[in-house]
Structure formats: C-alpha cells, structure tokens
Image: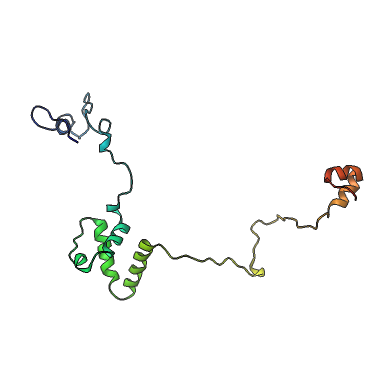
Length: 164
C-alpha cells in the first residue's frame, strides 16, 4: 500500500500532520484530514488479541525452544521479559520456583480440575429461604377438603378424576 505523495515527495499525511496542526497538536480550525482512519480503514487496529503481546504465548514459545536458542534469547518487549524471567526462576529450586512453575503450568496447560464437595451433615444444613416451605404431602391429601367444599360432582370436574 502506497501513500499519496505530493510534488515535494513528502507523504501527504506527514505534511498534514506537521502543517495542519495547532500548538497543542490538534487539527487546526478548517483543516480536515485528507487521510487517516476514515479514508484508510486498513490502517485501523482491528481490536483483536495480539499473541506477540501475550505472556501466555511467550511462556509456550520459550518453553518449546531448544536450550541453546533459549540461552541466547534476548527479550524485545515486556511480555517476553516477564515470561523469560519467570521461566528462568522456575528452573531454580525452593518455594519461589515451585510457585512460579505452578503459575506457568496453569497458564500453558490450564488449571487442574477443582472438585467442590457440597455435602452437608443434616445438623449443618441451614435453610436458604426462611419461612418458606415446599409441601411434600401425600397424593390426594387435599382431595377430601376439596370434595367437602365443592361436592363430589364439582370436585371430580376440578380434580379431573372420577370415582371418589
């Protein structure tokens, strides 16, 4: 993709950026950009995750390097530096090395499955909603009351049954 050049050979976007700005760097009044995000959507950041900036990506990449390549590796950004230092630390001994190894393993291979035991003893059970009871009455428990109030014919119609 080539940018437009004016007769002086200077990119028009560069010339505009220098000449069409006020003292605070904003576009000067009356100056509308001729190039930029609105005219060059290919220059926009698509907002997607960039693996080169991810610590997890660099953990994976550095862990898979041969030893001689890893030893000569020079980090170029913060993500690479963090991953490199953590891996070097994990290769050591002691409590810190173990904690760092766990963190790297969790990021590269996923956390191990966590089992949660939800069993309670009957005495330990605490009701979640106090004052609310879900009835568990035997079948036809209320039928007698309905028959007494409505009569047998109307009760049979309401209950959808016959032969009381």
